[in-house]
Image 1 (cartoon, helix red, strand yellow):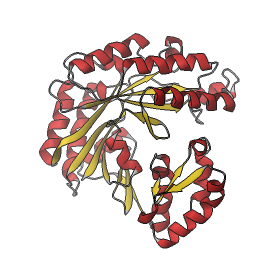
Image 2: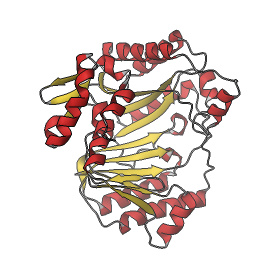
Image 3: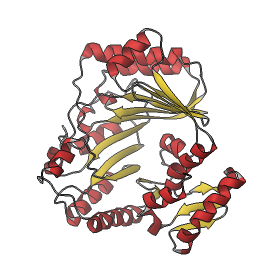
Length: 365
């Protein structure tokens, strides 16, 4: 079984932290969905599908007709498991009555980000906090009871009290899954420019760590399992699709900038929507590919599996890889930042806070 990832690189508004903007022209949207269906036809591999993830961008901006057409094509071409997890990313303000009625969607991932309208305005989100609550009601009215919401912390001038209010609001909505990420200042984005100009200021590292600690404390107290560095789920509601990325399960990526992985190689389509559509219309697959040797496969495992609660299963490694990993882990194990138990190596609660540094030291160079 494999996962199917469909990338919809449309944004309904510019996000100040990503800097990406795209107007949604109906003719482009129709041609893009045509291209997605065509790419599915062109691809030679037709594995059984266990998860479908419609996201990356704003798929909720597609018309119901295009959504129906896309899903219908997927189910016609692929053997989709009847119990497949079918996730669709949505903006809260795009969620309206009956939008899921004719779709196989059984899981919704919604970008709430924050419940402060001031902070939503700061990152140029179209929705307001009240629309998140309303969207949850509509989703449940559709009979969908597997909802994930995204939260963001570390806004300029955000306090611990502000963040606690967001966490509590999220808990009160009772989503089955919560993902939370710190605000990033990526070079080349409008937010980074504001930082360079001194118009905004990053919160200090100590406050950021306290916010992360508070997140873990409050969500675990509310019954959520902290199963991946940035992800929390009620029992039985881990993201099956995202877990495939972290546990070395192959997946097929469809669309502009979509990535595919089959253990032996990684492939990614060109990001330019226009060029992607033109290539597919010519019957050509516009991608680049990287063959993964043992060293690259090992490094991939370090930055994926080690993010999870279970960590890395040592039995899946070659003897050379296992010896290298354990030798380089020795200091971190001694410091209580990594732990080895039942044939697995995983980050401890203390180790999570410096996970990037640990992963870097464990990789083969």
